[in-house]
Length: 275
Image 1 (tube, helix red, strand yellow):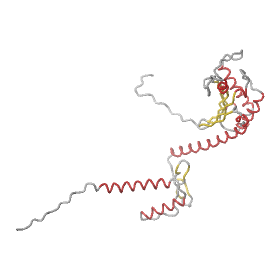
Image 2 (tube, one colour):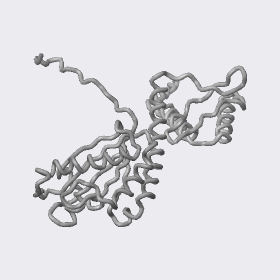
Image 3 (tube, helix red, strand yellow):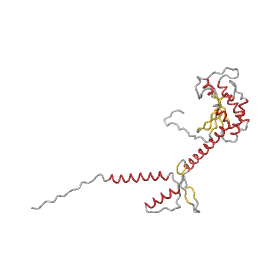
Image 4 (cartoon, rainbow, N blue to C red):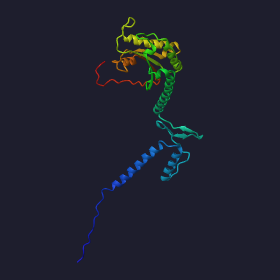
């Protein structure tokens, strides 16, 4: 009697794809690690990494390969070598060049305005220590807030003699700067009661105009100056205390940023029926 041979059928392994997928994930992870590493390395480390990668893929990159340079905003374009051997920037799309130029201009202006703010702090140091002047910086520009009692008598808009020295020193610092100046007068919420001004609106506007006139008389081009009266509409402290009202009575000199604003036309809605 012939014995039947048992044939063993191997079951197909449906999980073999996991091995390939794991290898792919590992390589992807290594790729991003390498990208992160070369984004903030010096030239020597970059060349070592480039050489190692070249050996791994069966080729050795030239020692003259261009090295990307880093800035606070990331990698700059890699340079190409011209026929003379000098490094020249790679060609970039116009919109990229324009965006890069604007970023560079913003960085340079921010640094310059910080220098201007530091100079003004030195000029007005005694008043800053007494809490009568505050200098701040924002994207809009540099702001100098001066308590009104430093500049004016109560309910008046004529500059006090002791304030002239301070404002002339400010004008001296800003005379050669290209920035426009916005001077805004502020008051507290107590209604004014004299025969000169009908309301705090007039008082705040005339106080701002008095400062503008003095700055113009001391060498700042009138075309760069703006006078605004805001009454008590923008308080920086509560008006229910004497200290708060004293803080709100102030004149603000805003050194405006010179970067151009971005203007975009608003499209009309497709379903709009208005003419």
